[in-house]
Image (cartoon, rainbow, N blue to C red; front, side, top):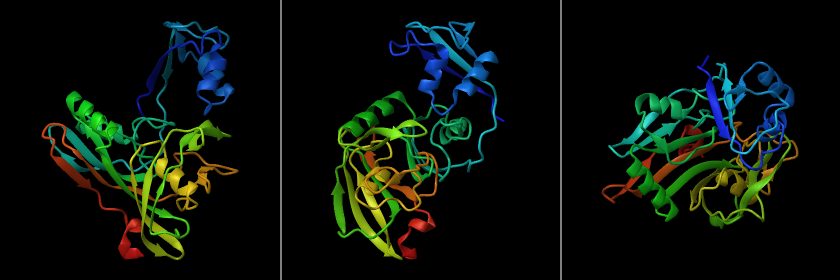
Length: 297
């Protein structure tokens, strides 16, 4: 049982004029209207420090708070290994199955919470999907955070992943440039996927080996769109083995799972970037799990 949490938001123009219940069910489609009704009637939500009811009309600028009571979080592997540490940066190995940050019912059972128990100043510079293992970088100072963010925007950060995909690509190496944007999802409303109207995204793929007609690949990403590797490999006709969400074409299948559901094999293997103080290039590696090692293929 965790300690509960208070979610806060300031009402914007897109919510002004709506009923509280209508806004909550639109903004948080993972919960049904009946669940929000129960929370409102239980006194868990307030508007400008007064108890909120489902029929209250929202006004621009109001403060909406949800005091979520303590809850049991799903069991996940709680732990991490330190791969690199100095006064400015921290890089850790995230286990497969552990969420990076609070989301979807996870709060204390997240890598961020575990890391901040030891390094309370740490700020994550990117995210890894729950089913993805490997390197996650944190900044330990505000100056480091700004410097790393600038390096990322300038294309000075290199990220390399290992993935197990369905089928053997016809070419030993190739580049995928499918745009990524939001598309419809029957349970979440929208998810990121391949979309002609999406934002540019670039992935460089290299085949490392084959096993039983499937392939182990290395993927370097020049951009960092949500679920980029999963989407791009599926768009290229080689979805990650076991991916519950993305099918060939890089879009959700006819009966898609959720982004956080596991089953696929993806590992953040290498990260290289200029150090935020010295400017010297540092390179961090995290050994892949057994299923993503060449010695098994």
